Image (cartoon, rainbow, N blue to C red; front, side):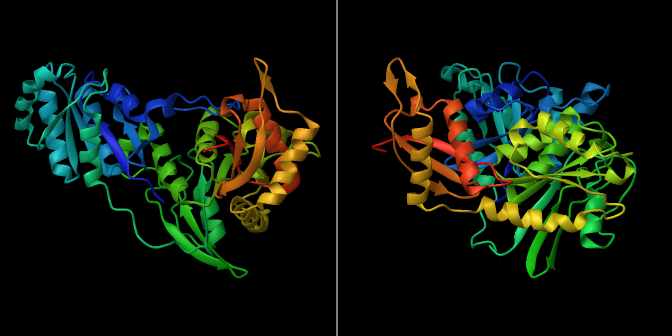
Length: 437
């Protein structure tokens, strides 16, 4: 299910990042237990009224050495392109400025839904400061205090009133939806063309030349697939040339809709930090993942090259230890035939459900092998386990005290479950619940 997108737009120093962090809450500061997962704070997922959405902070975009007003215009244009709803943030203490009026003109012409937030109204008795902002023509101003978290509820209610309604009806469960994600110039477009057997996407040696993302449906050996092409990470020429961070938002949209995420690496260039950032989103979303190393034909190889490259991937992507690795060439179609069995396998594992009695036998055998930890003399007691969800497989442990389930022991149990059931290509989530819950 694709999440709706909220973008925060406004001139500098109105508190965009503060409001962003308030909306996102603790989720932006979660530290992944496995090393290697990196984050960028200009985009994240958030939740309101039990519905998730993506949120982007345009203040985190740096656009070269362009003049400030020009940067603001470009940031607003990007938000207009990508967002379902725009939060236009202004500073209540400074009042309406010429820069606010310029941004308002852009947003007004966009025809996108806009919610006007007046930040820095820290004292409810100063609400009269918002009235001047009616002159911007953006409707009712919502008084906010990012520093104190005041007014966010009413503002988010207004935002959600403009979000697209969630589509009704079930998706075709027989179709496997997969996407290719990765930084520019790893060869995603060429892979899409090779998979589909036709020139469906423009291919160029210049990084980021693809303009449009296209979904394509096809059938192979009786299995139906939909490939969600994330190569189209720029829509507006130079607006996107300086804003590589925004390509990730496009990938996030595809990840939301995919069952299987193929993380594409460039064999010629090796692994860089951006690869780990992009892959981290697939892992955090709980999707089935496989790693594709493209342009393998361009590498001079000996009998150790593949093994050494695979070890580098494992060292850099510790949190993706469950993901199979496939070395291919979009140009020569080398090993592309092996892609489909892998996609089928990880999709099946992603949706796998284990019988409760079998799962409990495995968990109790693991506890017998390695007793549960203690904290201040109190020992963790696991009463029983059950799988509460698929996609990804999620196991609930009903225990005497959830705080006693330390990360290391959770990892031990996950490894035991993997050893027994495989779960190749899919993350496993293990959560602790108090026995009476």
